[in-house]
Image (tube, rainbow, N blue to C red; front, side, top):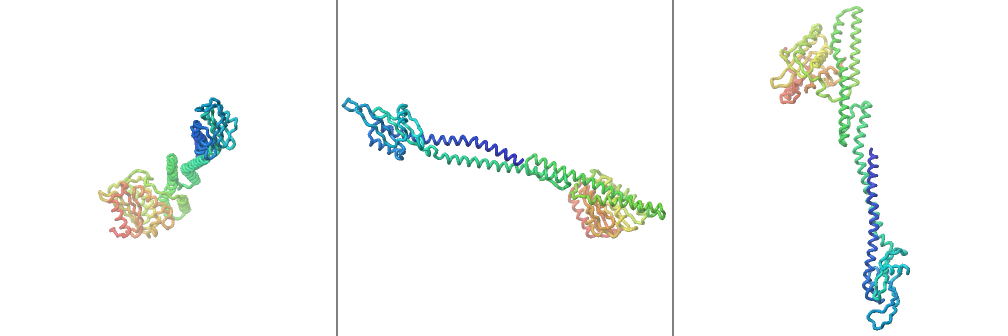
Length: 481
């Protein structure tokens, strides 16, 4: 496209230059010719009044020498032989006067005779140029001929220079048009090339490629559409991978129950087969989670990526604690629940909140010894507050690297940890504009603090609650049991 634009611009400019330069060059040539002949006509006219008065050689020489052409030797006067009596003489007998010729003759006698016969000025070609023959009546009634020589140099004076200037201007215009066309072509082709390269890269699996929205309006629109398409593709792939990982992780909850129940079956072939099947199923689930983690791409989390809905957090927490309390009783764990006496509406879908709670409680049962106590607390600020905090604490050994535990796919370093459980919790919190913090709990183990905002805002109260929560994480205080 770039070279096509250059060729088109080059052809159009060349045609325009030729259309104007050729006629203008011819006009310059004709103007120089007319100027030379007009100057010769003027030079010949200056001798006419003298010829009309006298034919005396000396006076004619003086008149010829006084002209510019005569001084250069380019002007000649040819006075024919006189056959009539001069006026003012007493004799009636005609007197014959000899012909007078002043200056160098370049025209032939025939050309001079023809000019006298026509009685008007004419131009003839002579060696080295042209000569102007201008008949002029003399005192005797005959016609003298004034001859002015015009060299070829005078006819073409400054014509070559003018043509060179015109050619230079034309070439400059053509080169300038090529440069401008090249720049304009670059402005159009470069964004199109980037768009094509990005499309090829996206087709090769480079999902992070994006196109700058530059260039003409149409290309900017195409780039914007391409970026939107690429974002949508990445979002769909991420959703698919996370769905596979999250669904697999959610299977951990019934698997944990199955594993514990299988452990209490005692001895026997059926019990061994059951425990072997549960172990195999758990291995397959771990493999699915690991595969999803390996295929994960770096992405920016969209706050609106989760289901836009709401539920009663207190009801959901009571329901899930009733489910996990049975398992906690079997393992001798003390479970405490607080802050769920009244409804607490949060902008989270019920299924997502259930998955987040199961992930946190499942981590407690999986990564703490049997008999370890745990608690779930719900805190709602005052009437002016726009946030809800859910605390899941345990009295286990704690997490060595809390920051790593929050990075999806990395885990916290404990055996069997994939890092996907807390990532489920983090995405639920960030969907409301909140976040998740992991730190030491008042029970001596790990505390997962889930902060859910009710309107996604960043008001003064929210900032105050955030600072207070951060201080509490930094300086934990024991609370009464």
